[in-house]
Image (cartoon, rainbow, N blue to C red):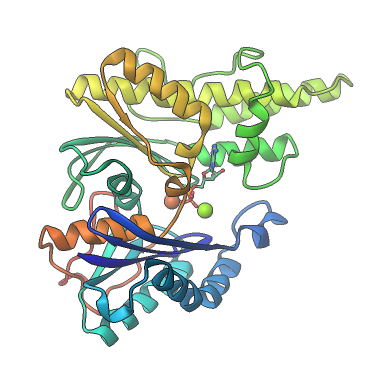
Length: 346
Ligand code: ATP
Ligand code: MG
Ligand code: FE
């Protein structure tokens, strides 16, 4: 099916168009620069930016795909989780297009979309799929027997998300927002064994699949402060590399363990932090050693985009899942166990 997907859960206005597992267009307008001076995403600014970018981005995607709106078989949209006001802009636009075109509407889960997007890169997801989902707002290990209908959380962060930790450490080091890409770049010039920062929740009695990054954040901040107080230079690249090493070590260790214990021989990594080059390299190494096939989409498909929403919408349509009602609500805390919001619920 030919499906248009709309993503507005945070600061990216994303519109993607897919035909089955084939990506035809991926248009993204970001308001990230408008938030940089505040050190984080400001919801009201994000909503207004979505409103301005929505229709032009849809038109850009249609043009890029070389299709017209009437060719579409369905319209998909992120129904949650995310910022309520930001979600509302996408949901309203999707309803308007679906209604005007007389085509089914699929309100889908943002987290399931981050997983499903890999179909555009590596073909059909194996069933079940083990997914490590790491972004600015989420860090979870998910076991998905069916990404359109059955997603089970094995573990999640008990405090900060992995991307949030990157953003906070970037702030401590004075590197700006968003922190992930800057730390990734800087870390290549540093020694990852320079400082041994703590690995949260990796003790024998800790929950095997939960994550904790706030202790790491505090440890890095204290280490940097001690240097500054002593009047010494802070080796920024070394700190960035050592911090990144601690995060990626824990993420990959737990993901590989989950695969082994659940008997799953594939690991998918998605979400903005999956764009991290060290995470990709370390996961590649450890999966190879454990006989696990690794699937990570290219960086542009890991961060928020509309193609991932279209990918999940297309899968919903292909499997005959029940579309959403035109009364579809935006649900800022849509649980990961609900890959989409079928008709009745409103
Ligand atoms: P959500 O959490 O709802 O999925 P989000 O706004 O976090 O949404 P994403 O685009 O999935 O959106 O992820 C953004 C996060 O990914 C930011 O915290 C950013 O710092 C981080 N990130 C992006 N690129 C990298 C990278 N190369 N290395 C590490 N972190 C990165
Ligand atoms: Mg974002
Ligand atoms: Fe996201």
